[in-house]
Amino acid sequence: MRRERLRAEVRRVKIAVCVKRVPDTETRIKIAPDGKSIDEAGVKFVLNPYDEFAVEEALRLKERAGEGTEVTAIALGPEAAQETLRTALAMGVDRAVLLTTSRQPMDPLITARVLSAELRSGGYDLVLCGKLAIDDYNHAVGTMMGELLGAASVSGVSRLEIEGNGGRAEREVEGGIEVVEFSLPAVVTTDKGLNEPRYPSLKGIMQAKKKPLETKPVELEEETLEVLELALPPERKPGRILGEGPDAVPALIEALRNEAKVL
Image (cartoon, rainbow, N blue to C red):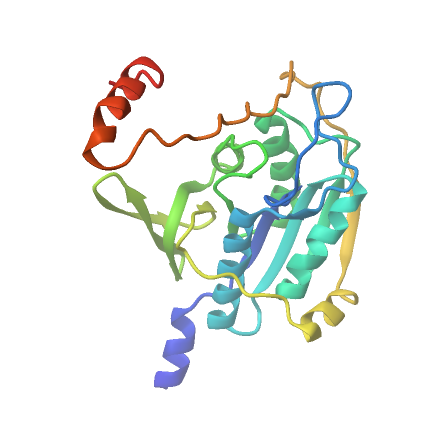
């Protein structure tokens, strides 16, 4: 009797994880000839690091709930994004859906609308995604999806518990921790510190090849944002030694005042 009661405390939920294909942070970025995009030749693309936290949390929730909980990874992007979804499948996700498009929209609202349409048709209890993507840092898609779906929305979560028909999340705020309780369905965006994402095992990589990955062509709205120019940050000036010991202090103060202009 007690064992059955404990099992009932963990609700089996249908979970979706929205992920994005982004350039690896260690890749040397080159600007394309148009001056408005990056040259993708030789660029390694990976699963967005913040989305890795979302995938890992979904898998942990599934492991606690046991059989009956399904995790689906959903991405919007080019055909090449299948590789990103295969990474999520290798980590342990059950199935994946790629909403194929010829371009990656700049406007986060366009992305949120397309993803929300897919999520709405799937009837998910919980939607997880990273709080931001490292290629645009707009920090908006997750919360927009919550609004469009009419679901509870909690952003930047560093701790998450799901029980029964609701959940409890913790967010790091200036000077402390904010605790938020919410009901399902909900959209939650994940932050660093939530967990430590697992590496795909060899067995997981082999199984990922057999797991279902559905592709669905989608039409995007007309773009409302435009990139006018991309530019690499200016090269830093080489450092120089002003002297040694106390004798260097006057020269250092002068340089900070007249060159760096921080005094």
